[in-house]
Amino acid sequence: MTTTRLTRYDRSMLRLMNDRRARPLYATAPRRRLVVGAHLALSAAIGALVAYSGLGAGEPVWPFVAVAVLLLPWMVATGAINAATRGLLELRERALDERQSAERSRVRARAHRATTLLLAAIAVVLLVAGAAGGKALTVYAAPVVVAVLAVHWLMPLWVAGLTVQDEPADSDGLTA
Amino acid sequence: MSEHVHNRLAVVRTERKVSRQHLAEAVGVHYQTIGYIERGQYNPSLDLALKIAKFFGLPVEALFSLEPFRPLTDEIYGRKTS
Image (cartoon, chains in turn blue, yellow):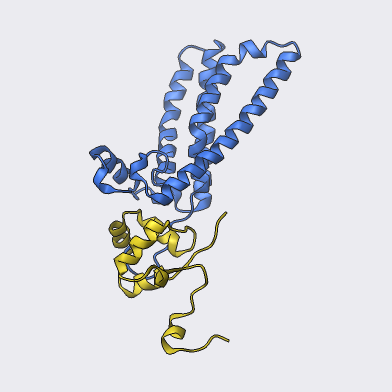
């Protein structure tokens, strides 16, 4: 992390991601797991509502109202995970130090493996359903592609939120 | 592949009354990184280890070692380890 090359945007993001006001939300590993779980559930609910509208099976307005309502807690959870990881995935590379850069690479590698496994499972299910004579391949293609995109986008955030370690305690009495 | 590098950073930092924040700003890292190094959860690069050693005005081997450090009192008072 070389502060001389940081832009005003980098510095403001750095301050934002190191803001500790919401610390009680993510101070311990069980709380972080809870926040990641809530984020996952909210993402799935939002995705399901969008897919429901996309398939033309629902009323035209209420799914969008429900999505708008769910987006608020979703954004709070996203912010909490980003704050817990100190902006590991949000900050630009130049705003990270060597440990954070290495951690970001580890998180992305794990997320890539997890997404690959998930995609493989989805592909198998769709192919089996297609081979069984159903219309799954054509009917669910669009929602599945959207879901895949969302998972591809959010998996690193979930992995980062689950793997972040507790803050080192400053046992020597000096200010951190 | 993760070789454990022992360090006595916490002892030296406390003895010099330097906060993690101050040390982190001086060597250009996040203050959590100093905590992770102290807890042995992160091995610094050679570049960072040299910067930390330079900050304290010590040779790098005074702070980092592949072998566990002897207690400082043993080194000062010359007690032999059994």
